[in-house]
Length: 135
Image (cartoon, rainbow, N blue to C red; front, side):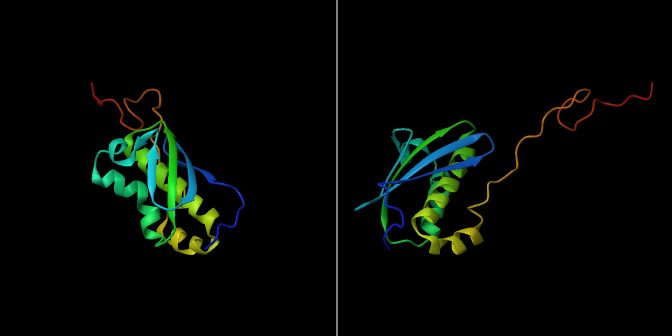
């Protein structure tokens, strides 16, 4: 399928907790994946993190090859991997509108709103109260 936009690349943003991933997807002859000027295997050291990052590409069952460059900031490594997944999913939708139904069903288009709750005064953590003493 031909890209519906006439641009050289598709740029999208993926977010999770405090991580923000700026993703550029360019149709190419072979797959390549660069995150913060590092190879995917170097930036995400474990198989689980790599799998999370490219999950939207794998599950979309798309035959086209892409050059994907990502600039990701903030958060931890797992949060960054999920932000990359979110950005790639959004980019694939821009590339081919037919994929929206499948990717949306997997939940990759939704920005996961869960984040750490702020600490309230008078409490030790967000909800943990100091030990109660009768006297």
